[in-house]
Length: 513
Image: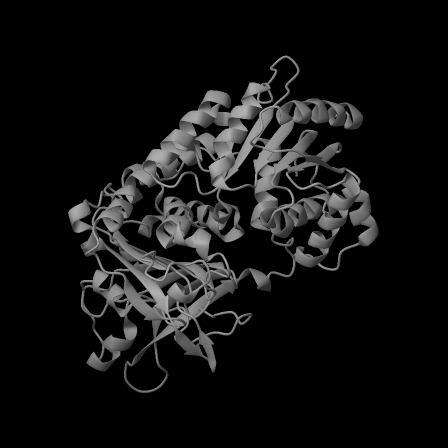
């Protein structure tokens, strides 16, 4: 692996939940597997009154609790954390950025970094613009071509609350940073199985010829969570499933599934092709939202003898909230490859299991030769790409049942990453994306025009939901696969949502293909 340049990672919100659970454990994994630059430092920034020692102690606890690669070598961890420092400051106070500039200059000199900084905004979205403007006021975004010094900005989703706020955020950001300096992180794109779609499609001659409207009947993209809002009711009620999952994660997955072959595998060429997909999404007029989009909310239910409260009974959620915890859409991509192929997208909380997958349903044979009773069991050929958990692929097709006659049965050929005994471990999404940001590789980050195109598609739906109180929010019992009304998006007899698991799956038990 190529080693990144020496750099300082500045984390705004370093004592927050994202840093504790994801960023710091991922950084330590990069360290112990030899991927960090030779000279490296982390500067945590926040309002907390923490000394360097106290900050390091907290980060040690975080790595020991949340690292995906156990056990943790405590001596190695302590040695790594010696490069961690903390600056107590108010990110909304412009004068405090003078302290930040002086601190960075001191650390740069101490560790012989060479002026390369990454600013990671692990803070609430309403503080993004203030931080970016204040970084610019102190010239902390300026690069030098003479000595190759670079500055990069990593922004966590959501990239705006709606189209208007997203455009405003992009306008503010681009006043300070150039587009090549901006890394909009979507951790779904960092998942190994999402990246593998590119290899699966463009490195195998047997699949790409079938990857079009002539052979594919429809596509499903599902992101199911078995948990509820987990004490984040006040935040979630201002977001909802469409903003929280569909506008970013699932549309980004769709971009990878539906893109044309790039001219080369670099960030410009790959992202050019995904942007074309988003720009080709067929608009859903506001008067047709109820025809192509459905929303739901989980209601109180008994799951394995335990009463699970409904969404409106969760802490921080208004008693008459109409925020969706389930969203299902029927979308079309108006281009030569995908014209007329319906794509069904759904995301929800309090569903039977945690699973994210893509299901490619191929067209049936034009004439079914075998027994009528076998027709019901044959169905469509399916390719299942499981993104999480139990990552892998499965191809479902029909075979003859042994014995007399020609009875047909569906069978599955599957592959799981866990079965590979001679390959390196699968890096976490944040691990991969943090390393890419240090290497200056933005391939797996969202570009500004892609974010804008996705918001242009979603924004009319959100406005119609907000301004038309007559549109229904369908209830579904916690632990089920969402509102039964979601099946009306399928207008063809015998076609319905794929259910990765028919029944409730306990937490920790993976769902097979």
